Length: 98
Image (cartoon, rainbow, N blue to C red; front, side, top):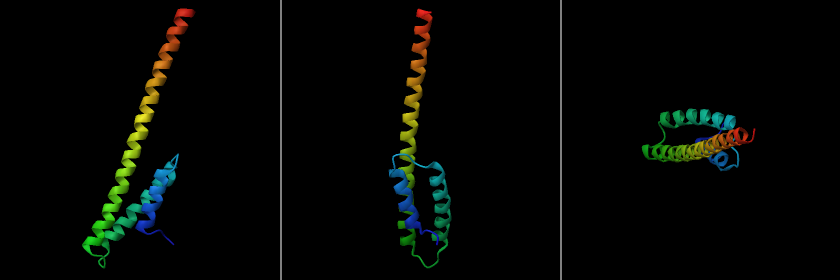
């Protein structure tokens, strides 16, 4: 049985809350999410209000995912700066002692 849109959103939120995200798992969830969004939009039985609520929930999850991605990017960039500085210091040390 395939997950509903609400279940997928909950799974994605759970994945975002984990210490270390499984990127492949997140990508699979987002592929399923895209399919469920298409189903929600093409559902003639749902009201515009219901569709709006579901799309708002999707938007919230995507915003969270973007925020998490930006935080990870900042952490990586900071680490690269420190690594570069450390390499530069090591080279200067070696030049001065060798």
